[in-house]
Length: 501
Length: 127
Image (cartoon, rainbow over all chains, first blue to last red; front, side, top):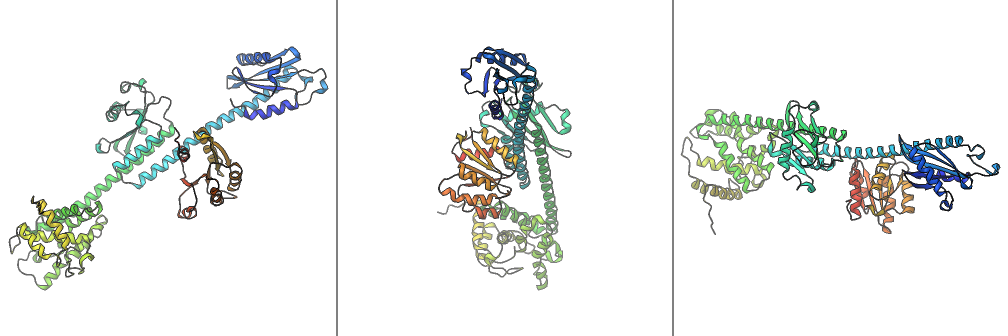
């Protein structure tokens, strides 16, 4: 009971009248306006009237020794009596001496009762307001936390593609914010993405969180009323069939469906072992909205992956279409791709570069689709103009792929795979390091495959012979450093790792 | 638990002052409040708080002016300044470059994280 707002008021009141005031909470004084109270002869009487007012819950009046008049008024919080307001004064012989609001002339019990009740009502109003204020502040603080969490999660979801690390961050964030002991994301179709995070202190209580979460999900009934709002919640596991045996103590469990339109991806859930904490509506709302956003991200990512896959497959079939025209080049693109990727690993290209190289090497000859078959498969030496047409395939390939945004980082590899290190190549005649890395790598892989493949006019050379020929091309046609790299990776690949030292 | 350190909260918005005040008091801090930079500055000089939490956009004297004025005071007596900001912009970075013991917390902020920050400054945890 907070009496501080009234201390001032009651003290002032006792200064301008002869009345003193006390506030009792249960069986003790929490405030007294009289500093010399302990010297009074009526201490026992005060106590008596206070206890009476509190236990009976009614207004009390008494006259005691030394001509003291005492009043006790119960202080209520709703229906419950939580204390008493006591007032007392010595009744004077001379009525004129009395100043202040409380006049002894009217010091009948009724008057005093009326006054005290009015005052109490004021106090109670103030107390209620204070209590409400406290509750509001507490709620406001929780809202602050919610908003912070919302904005944090929103930026997290927006800025990242769906991945296991993103999911881990997200679930960790939920665990921290929701005052629970365990949080999880469970995706039955993508088990590699399953994420369970527990507070450290309970690791030894739930021995196997993964098995526990599996059991929880199994225990969710197939039909639940709340499924129309996409969630399932139990407030006390001990009172819920199918859940009571899962854990030795009572726990609370909330699971929200990760669902986008008709596609169900899994569950986002929380487990709380603290019986004091209940799930609040705002938490359910937050979980639902997080699950909704997560579902959207998964759907988008899946769609994006599908789309990318589709585009790539279309393009791949184009490659097969060209290669089908010429039995000598069948499988060429895939072999060049394999050699190029072997080099990429050795060169420690990062993931993005590697991916670009992958598609560039796969598609480097796509421009040949625009070259007449008669020229492409001509067994005899090409005329000058025919050769010019053949040479246009790198630019044509680049033009064909340009509209595919996903492939734009690969274009330099396609355009420049016939540049020569000495600047004598095409289409631009770039020199040495001016030639994009992708182009230089593909040139090496392409040359090797050309030498080792059968042609209409000659059989293919062996790998060893090809490597020797390429040594001679290093520095003129090919990047010497990359020839060395290729030499190494190919020998390793052929199982001929040489420890030359 | 706070060690009875004194924290000044400067913000023109009553609900933000209230939330921070109650949260900090629960963690054992003494809290005083001001509704603008001018009032805040007076309290910094007279009450010598250990931490000043200030909003930026305020009438009379804003958070930037308050920071600049109090930075020189820190030579004699160090205290932590926490700026509550909507977004950390390059503009803010420029004027805070030479501010001592100044921390930024982005709005919307988490009251419990704010307390953790202050606990950490005094070298303890909230537990």
